[in-house]
Length: 514
Image (cartoon, rainbow, N blue to C red):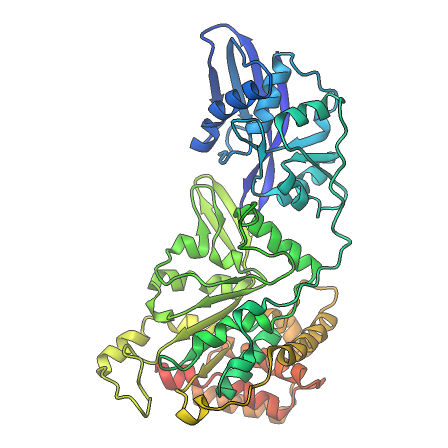
């Protein structure tokens, strides 16, 4: 008998329909034949399914059984198909007569006891079910809770194979997980990373961080060891505004597809902006994304959040260069033999580096031991095109003993966050009706409308561009930063002091690197 169960396969952060076709009663040796481009994890489903069937009180097929995952040109990976394969076997062997299984997309991993385990990509599966007009999804409880964020689709949590069989046969009813889309998500910042009040001195750096967070601008901190660069970067999450509900769902869909939301994994907290801090030994694929079946990398996992690259010149040159297009466009397209996917990656890049290999160039208390050629080779690890895409370059000088002994606490994260939040709200109002949510993501057309400057300021900007030999890209980025500074000041127009501050954030890339 032939049975067909609707399931799904992840392609990037989206899901595609997969039909699990099970045909039992064939002549030949009693064995399973699994076809449809399965990977090793899918092929191992046979052993899990046989044990789950036995321990749930069902019988395994005693004839040759063919399982096809259609369409055959899509590569299948992961334990998604344990539950639909088991249900297909029960229908094909007439141990289950299900009248309504066509109404659902079904996915889930099975333990040997028959209990279900969560799978990644539950949000994408629920969105696919809504697109296909299905009435709901059958998923393990933890995955069903995630899928409930999609309105218009019921997410039914099934804790075991036996419970799924009883539900589909009409013996028991299962309440769908209540939809959570109407709930306002407003988690506070993660204060376990510290507070800006703990930062001694570094007033210029604190100001640059505030501007960067207020507009979502990229930032590079340059200073000797121990000047507080990493300490400041770790506290950036405490001043970032909470993401909107749409942003939270986008963040969740990426982390779900990457398996970051599975039970017991605390890498993702719904309602907070992600902060990723990969080690400098990371590969190009780990940073950009990819694999046999292309999946999210660190830049996509930092979508609507922060990507912190400490010791920037220590990263491989090839890994840094792959950041160019994502920084510009806010998405990355990855092509592999298994297919092509486009992944969102609109993130705020925060980088930290030393001014030279030994780290003490320009430090009045330590003598630099680096030769000019060593310094040049060190700085040449960061290309001009990449620097051009970083909006703010700021020095973090070494602190004096008097500054370190200062007992009076600095301004708190809460005070800075209030100003950042107010600036972001102005931007959301300004860009209402468009996909732009922050000044750093303004299009050229939006820059012409919202970053208007008079002829006097235009002459000032032209003079700065000529003296610093800046590119046309830097021209737009200076205007974006100036718009953010004006937003922090509550000004409708860009004034001269706003523009001058934005220009001085671009001066280091020429003075320090050329």
